[in-house]
Amino acid sequence: MKRPWILLFAIVICAGLIGGCATADSISGARAQLAKAKAAGADWSAPYECFAAEAYLKKAIHEAEEGSRKEDVDLFLGKSLEYSKKALESVGGEK
Image (cartoon, rainbow, N blue to C red; front, side, top):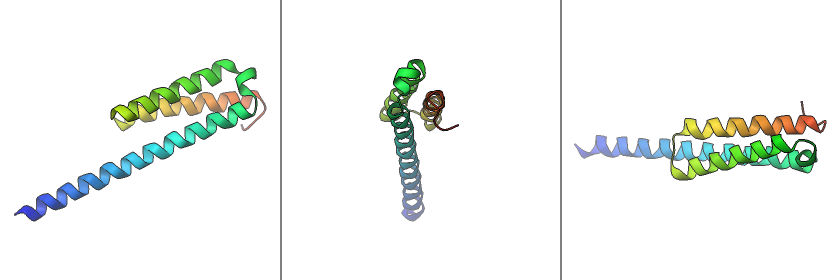
């Protein structure tokens, strides 16, 4: 009788760990995109976009650390990536 509960518990734990790893990878990707924009000089040529990208990234990290829903974290990461991309485009980077 205990075996189905143990299996269910193991599945739930694995799903949670997989979701956490995906969020960590997404945060790393957003950090790298922002760093790339700043390295290209976007913090001078597109200060608003860099500031917004950094603020959204910090909010995403905060939400992830607080254990918020993955959808909330992804929303802030998406905004951060969007502004990082705009900042990079402003200095003639990726389009």
